[in-house]
Length: 268
Image (cartoon, rainbow, N blue to C red; front, side, top):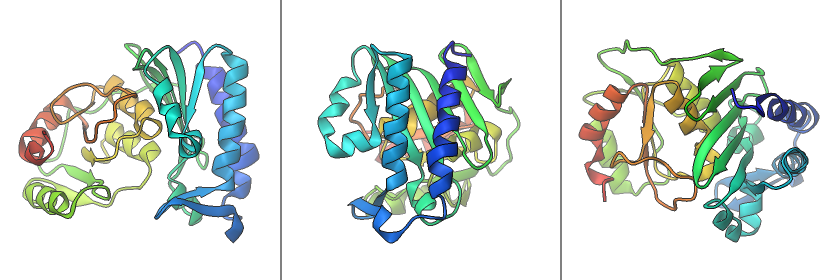
């Protein structure tokens, strides 16, 4: 595990205990707002990011910070990700679920160095589950090493996030996927979707919007567990990329099959 595994976990636990859970199912109407239509932010998101940012700065004073809510206030913060050591923070992932008073939701932290994710933490405040990964060092769930299963059903389970696609892309993707996959609802929470792929609850996931606070930690976790998440052309995800589109799968074999079956409209 990463040398900062435990102190970062303690930061996640404190944010969950002192901010995220006290507001859960207790938000007032004035404590929920829209950054853009349908993209919610709550007072808990802002307070959680402030707390985590301050704690990570105390832990690693020379590292930069890029948080989802900081980006919403100033998109130029994204430019910091490409160089040096950077903490990437999603203070509440799955805010729509959280604001509605239902699971799943989580807290995501990734550590990037020179535009490569080197460590990730995915924390579930309701269960205390912690998923962690370190580059070339494996994936762990609640401190125990985890690896994807090599056994898959004949009709793998696919969770397809189509919300940011064009109508044409949505229809084409669903038409192409239906003959091969059992299509299920997405959890609307990357902190839950990536563990589902690693555990084999889902076998295929498609994402169109690929912002680093949503995906950097989860991609590393899935890949280190032996699954595969990459751009449609097979190239690796880099947190500073402004590209769209990701395909995740519970094994490289399933990834190759899905890329062949579903990827034509996205490989541009």
